[in-house]
Amino acid sequence: MTDPSLLHRIEAAVARIEAAAAAQRKESDSLARRHATLRETMTRAVAALDEIIAKENG
Image (cartoon, rainbow, N blue to C red; front, top):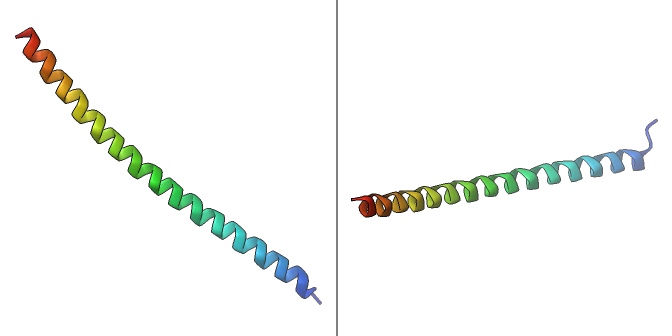
C-alpha cells in the first residue's frame, strides 16, 4: 500500500510546480506587453527624428 504522506508530498510538489508555471506565464505576458509598448514608443520616436532630419535637409 502507498504511504499517504508520500502521496501528500507528491501532490504538494505538483501544486508548487503548477503555481510556478502559472507565475512564469503571467510574468512572460507582462514582459510581452512591456516589450510591445516599448516598441511602439521607439517607433514613434524614430519617426519623429526622421521628420526632423528631413526638415533640416530641406
